[in-house]
Amino acid sequence: MGRLDGKVAVITGAASGIGAATARLFVEEGARVVLGDIQDEVGERVAGELGERARFRHCNVAREDQVAALVAEATGAWGRLDVLYNNAGFVGASGRFEDTSVDEYDLTMDVLLKSVFLGIKSASPIMAEQRSGSIISTASVCGLVPAIGTHLYNVAKAGVVMMTKTAALELAEHDVRVNCICPGYIATQLAAGRELSQVDDEENAARMAKVRERMGSSQPIQRMGEPPDIARMALFLASDDSAWVTGTAQVVDGGLTLGKPWRKLNQAITEPGPIRMYRPAD
Image 1 (tube, rainbow, N blue to C red):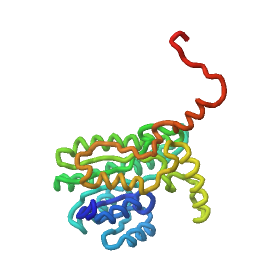
Image 2 (image 1 turned 120 degrees about the vertical axis):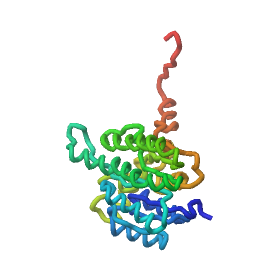
Image 3 (image 1 turned 90 degrees about the vertical axis):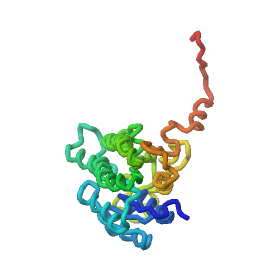
Image 4 (image 1 turned 45 degrees about the horizontal axis):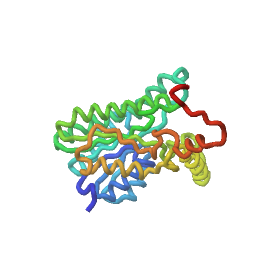
């Protein structure tokens, strides 16, 4: 018996990365899933691999009509909606505030933050009427601790965290839960940025290996996260195992936000050289 038997889910950004891994896991656990993405060919292929309990629909998450149609695809096919996973995303504008155009700002916020609002807006009335449901969104550790260079991404993901908490407060009386996931470095094209664009598969694999090595060594658990690491958290939040969990930002980051790995800090402390101990009299 699967943890999502009988449940119907909608996942955005489901053609690749975290979204595709989550769609696969949800189907394995018994759910019927509508996959939404702008990558039509890849999305259709993933849905086809998953069989009759999955279907794909083109969805630009910045368009209200397309998000509403994605939700309607689920209710029209299977009569209900139990899980919405707002997962679609991209890095967005990078650099400095002074060098960022208003158009870049608008696009970044549309895809990363407005999309979550549209998902909640479309799904919440259905779930409220059912008096059950789980809304999940992909935020980021960058929404908790800002990173240099991804200024608008940081701001948008912080907005996702607060939108999650606000929606959770609003929808709790209807037994609808709202949570978000804050991933750290995940081995996807999004994490690798432009390093994987316009290259062949063999070169992609080589570059991703370098990204894994570089980013994995910077955190306590010495590896990058993989899409299934996030999918398993999404499964928990989608399932009845999390029936009393709402308004949370679940950090899944291999300890990244804890700071430098202790072993590296310990090496620095114990390296040969004079050590001056602090005393109250100093």
